Image (cartoon, rainbow, N blue to C red; front, side, top):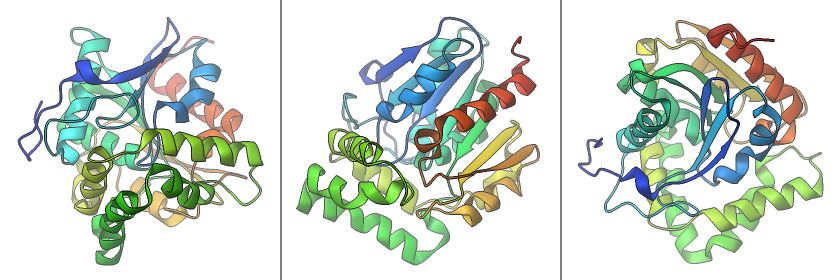
Length: 272
């Protein structure tokens, strides 16, 4: 369960939120500035038909810090270990990844195809390594977090994650989630994993069927980045979520959940 950086993460240190008793297993991987709290609308809205796990990524929220640096492979391998534990012998899970979580999910599908039944990739990208300026900007966030601290860092970044029309309560919830979740060194490892990554060469190797969603008001990764993911995947559907920014799963949860259920019904034949 080790990434190429040589560090393994003990999944006993992961904090998980769980919901649902029956149905396919859906493992939820949050964005780089968030935590399991990002998936409350899915834990509440899908649990009647789906068994859900949402992590605080290694070094985030209530999860333990890694013993050393984790690269993207290390985060992906940790997600795979989580599937092995909760899906049982020979079992598989569907992966739902938002933004950075989508990058982790796609890499897990490349490294552990037997464990990944399907993918839901929301408001994501190929990684920041596609552009030197994006990579530098991602790395610069680490010093910014160290200088500002989690609360001021979140107050600066949180409002951009939703559309300009988002209710104030959602903006506050997103900002509070970030402030409670991010810290060093975990955020730094995640930022470097994004800065060093261009998934482009790996996407044709993804065999799992994928649903790619993007909010039409996404100001962070944007529609084009999601389109560039969907195109090279062998089995993909691409959906625009109207009236949503970068966090479509939180801003338009009813529409988002309906698309997820439709995808799972096709790939896992959930009974009506």
